[in-house]
Image (tube, rainbow, N blue to C red):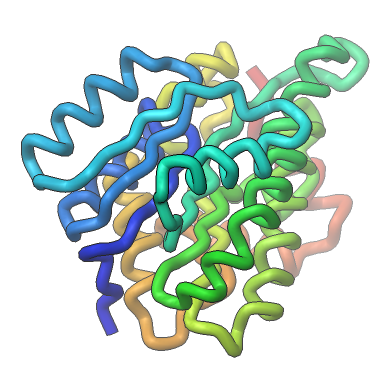
Length: 262
């Protein structure tokens, strides 16, 4: 059954570009009002103007750095102050780093963990009670195919996405008797600004998908009568993720290490 978004509100983190902006465009086209959260106010305002004009939906812009303690309560309080009820939450904000752990900047990897893991959990916990009461929306946490195996050279990033996958599948089970649809979205290499931040496309394993392809995978999964707890975008990525779960662990780690080398 196709989900109905008309008259609901979706909050999207990391909404200024890539998957976040694509989710915003697709949900607005389905009639959802939006709350767009990211650091770059100019990008958010530009996207908001476009979506209001094209779809006639309400779009609220919140320029915020999400990598801070207590950000979930801050967002919930801001929504209450504005009289906005969030039915759908898309936790898309995150970034990756690439280097052997001993060469990583401790402050940067602390920020990576804070945004990819701590903020995602905090925001999810903060909005879950309201979304469960509403029972007509969805929770989508963006994981990655990096979640299915350790990745030497990207140890922290891979571990954060493994956490997101495990966490989301557990929450999906906890929410299965409600009307809330919970999904961990696992894209492979996607043509977004992720690799600009990473500083190299050498970690892009396999053929890159577009943001539109990845978001289409998520929306199709949410439209299914029995939404799965997780979905991998792209048939080749699904095969690779399945093999990573079946082959000997040491072999999988070695393959992953070679795959992300310069």
